[in-house]
Image (cartoon, rainbow, N blue to C red; front, top):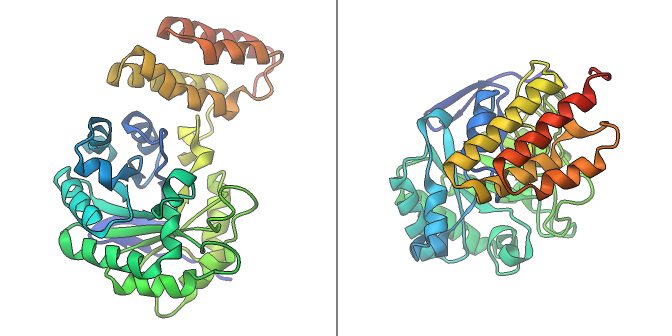
Length: 326
């Protein structure tokens, strides 16, 4: 296949060629992490997904997820739910928060969401998915986009037809995660169907591919092979906001960034919860792989309860690496 290169646009938002997006992820893509990913080159970031029901009930923890800053634009707010009226109402509330677009989550596979018919659960009720999409599009002025999966399971790989139906509802971009709901996050993402949707001459909206992308090099392969308009990276960003940058950073520079993330989170929330928010990134960060005798330090890192204690442990890792420069 030839190398595809074209300008990517969603509504009036221009992304240039081959943009790489940060996927919306629960407990991960809070404002501190989004801002860092943006700094390193993420073309688009999304909030953690927001429950439509909780938004309407004015649940404080949910409302706080709507906080966005100009430094991270363009930014999308993603909502999920299974009730048409609730989704429309939530979309209107979200519009007031001033994001650049509203994304509808029809892809989350976790049981507490999909099991109740929301998220990927919507793949079992396509008429309702389309009704929600249509009514949200009609209710707001912002661009509306959708994120979904290939289908509920391998017997129902409906994405090719579904993409056309969603486009007909008026969405302005579609993100496809290359797995079924039944796969959850296991097995390999299948990009061939994502490519098929993109190559369908009836599809005019941008197609964003998602699943198993661990680096910009892998994103390049996806652009070259499947012709997608953008690539979205999810779990590979944990503890790794520099994944969006082509610059090679050494261990010390990366550690500085993780320490900065810790400070941002502690300042933004409070010490205890700020540490909790950062822990997931420290536990997953690839930078500590290969440090000799790291296990004890890792345990200490995940047990630290004050910022000072945690920063001291992180600083100690620098000395462990002195002899083995990257």
